[in-house]
Length: 125
Image (cartoon, rainbow, N blue to C red):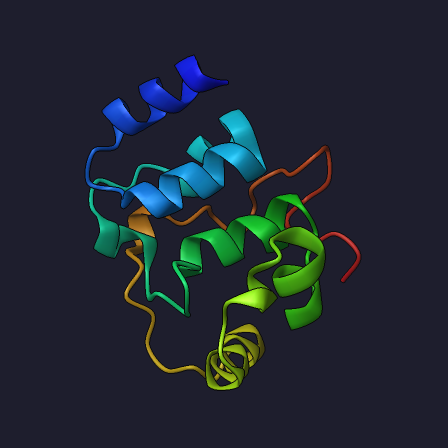
C-alpha cells in the first residue's frame, strides 16, 4: 500500500497530504474515481469541512450509494468526528441541493447517464 500511496501522491502533487493519505487509506485505487480528471484542488468543488469536498460526496453517492449525512460522515468516512455541527448542516444543505452554486467544474462531473455497478445513474428512483 505504501508504494501505491507514493504513486498517488506523485500523480497528484496539488492534493493536500491529509486528503491524499485519507483517500488511499479509505478508498485505495478508487481514489482516482473521486478525482475524475481534476487537475487542481478547486476542481474538487467546495470543501464542506475537514477536507470533505463535493467530489468525494458525489463519489460516495454514486459509487457507494451514500444517501444521507450519517452515511457520509459515519458509515463511509468517520469524518463526523471532525466536522463541526455547522459543517454537517452545510453537508445536509448540499445533499438537499440548496447549498448554493457549486464550484466543481461540469467537465469533471460524471454525466447523468453514467453506468454505476451495472445500473443507470438514476437506479431506484
